[in-house]
Image (tube, rainbow, N blue to C red; front, side, top):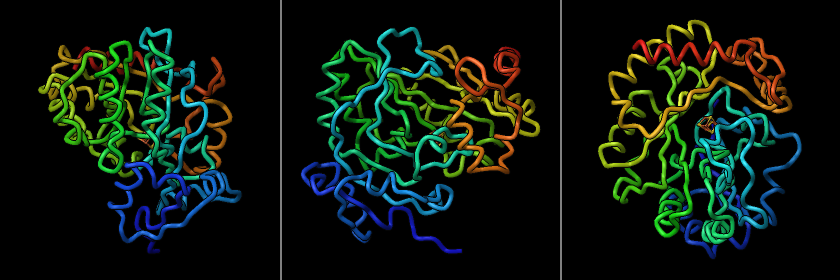
Length: 317
Ligand code: SF4
């Protein structure tokens, strides 16, 4: 079956056109069909949407964010030692389609919402400082950089506010979009890495392991703080061998001493979210492994061993 190209239709709240990000996006998609909407939720939260079908041909929704912008970080996330840990989402949903992505379980739609008023979001951020803010939450911010310039906006914010610290987590190979900027000690670029087989089979649209590693090397060479994340580790047939190979490749390609940190974690998800993910993908191999409810989430029964297994692989590699 033939599907419309990505963002063939763009829904837009009336107020968005006063913001530069909306104008940039319109210039990038001159041939798309533009449909005015009263509120983004009229489209994004509509009933009877088919997430899997929408993922094949997602539409774009441009909106203005109003009200609360910052949320306390989830207990299921690594806080990296920060007490004042927040997250925010300038974008909802992702250009990629990872089979194990929790967004599949929390959003009613696979369409992408871009909140074009980043200026307002940054002004609100000043009110919560000092703070550690994950700014690539519920999306992959850097993957959209060619359209939005939001990572650039956040890095500029950190240049002005030394008491702000941000993490931009990504699976993209889009470092070239920000490589002209001066690295800052309060900005961490965090790449999530997966074995070659996992990336190819379960992370549709995301760059290969080799492309992500090349981006890490480029960022390190330019002096950025880089975090390497092997999180989530997912199980699939032959996962141990795949992660063994990944550990060897990572150690061959990256000098770990140059990284600011390494984060390792096993797949986990809030119970309701996990239930919806399974319902959407009943045949998913990665979601078919036994899980148990523990610590407020669905987790592998042998979660500790899974994490220890990869840590050992990295040490031995
Ligand atoms: S890159 Fe991250 S946010 Fe995007 S689909 Fe994959 S897991 Fe989800």
